[in-house]
Image 1 (cartoon, helix red, strand yellow):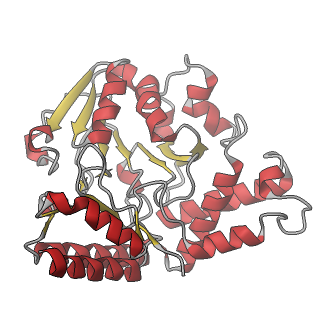
Image 2 (cartoon, rainbow, N blue to C red):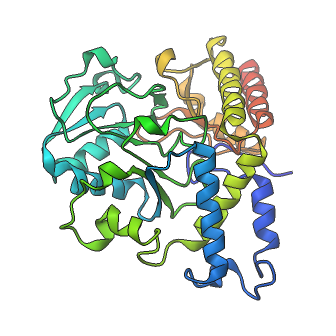
Length: 357
């Protein structure tokens, strides 16, 4: 039996998907070659790419007036591409709610005028400030927020109301539950959480918004160039795209985002309830902003952290160490992490508390 992987990313991939890929590693469907050896412009690979894109569109119910792009560079490149393409028309508004939004602001501020509409940094990012307190710019070029802060484990569960074009980094929450795509002008997400292996980035852009993008940038930095080329402006990360397509098919077979969303809420509730009912563990995030994907927790006795991690690994529970900037523990419970893994973690935490509490 494989061990349970609670890594924040690159994260667990469904075992069924890995088994399928293993079976096709040497040769894909009688083609005489591996997917990794195919030309990205071959008819075989075009079929793979188109099916993956359509399955993603089906899962997210992407409206017809949006482009779905498969790009490279991770969400980190998007921190620069977004302001380069869309930030020259005025002030760009940003929500500062954690480490990733802070990095996005840092990169954007090198390129365009930015306005931080709110911040929870004074409270160590244990919440997302209430929307009524935001100091937004009139006629802003766009409003950017990180839907789920992977490191701090906080989330904004409902998209903010705004007249500005709404942009969101959804790297660690996309595909975890249904999303109303029509609320957004642009969504981007690094793959290595719920989508597939690292190396791929999904961008979903409304056509009307795309028309306003800068055409003065180098080709690789223009969303329009990638859209015109069906994400084949240059050689894409073909294996990551292929494997992500298998994850999309797996999700559809599981009943889609409504089904996986209910499972994810149940997993998170189980873990948070256990933590809240313990006097040995604690979660620092305000309840209304708790992430359903990334659950940080602290031990009552921090000197036991190393022992907790050592014994957890022996018990088959991997990658529970919190981010170095936060400390403590973090359990990332993405789609590929089943309820059984959460149950195993809770049982271990209970046993550890009995021994050391």
